[in-house]
Image (cartoon, rainbow, N blue to C red; front, side, top):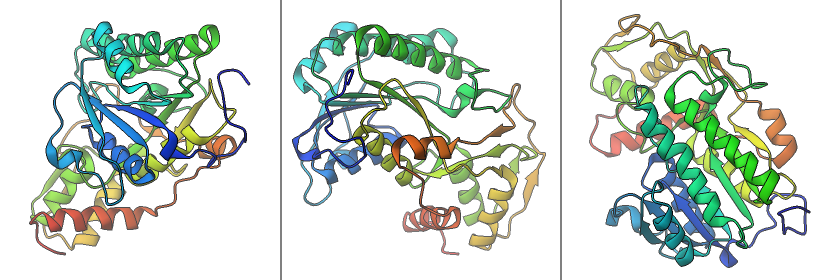
Length: 326
């Protein structure tokens, strides 16, 4: 089997305790959740980012091995090569990126970090014994048409991610690197940056403040971060999918306004939701929903956390940080 070493064709065949794992972008929202999951599984984990990791983020769960943190910039090919000589990974999760929550990110910066960074990583892995390279893309690669049948990037971030995907395909096709791309949809959960939709709405609701937003007609596929992390580790465990690209979402689309309204109900907020107080951004994608059935056929993974449960967990975490209880 080209570029693969699993003896089974189903997920769950890996003994993570025997695997050396590198996770770039480990200080980000998803990266921190992934690192905790991997340490719980017992992986020999190397985390990576452009700055030293905070002590609180490096503490492993009970029973987990403490991760070793590597500090390097993916734009520096020599630094990437040196980090890989240290980590010698069996499995790589590549999350390092710029522009995830910055629609106006400079196109050249996005290209250098998100695409050239992938080239540096894959070049350094070429010829190694790596078993799986998971490139983390974005649902925004599907663009404003919202069809998962074609890629149609509409801003610098999504365009750079499409470029990263294309180079991943090239390294799979011509150099046998076992690359899989995953495309997360609208991720939410504890620890998400305050300025993103769900935590911003929750903080306004908990503070009884008005919440100014767009008309909220955009349909999104909301996936809880712990489900997403399980999807990523499942992709790492599944044989026979090198070269594939998989959506990580629930397959259910909901208008953004309906999510904000549900947060208001769960909190019992007294502030007002003000849809239409902000305009849509230029090029806003109005409908992005994962092809969850295809992902389930290829990997066996489906998101499990009901939306209301995920929202409650996230609200409870905010309450534990000092916000009022509903």
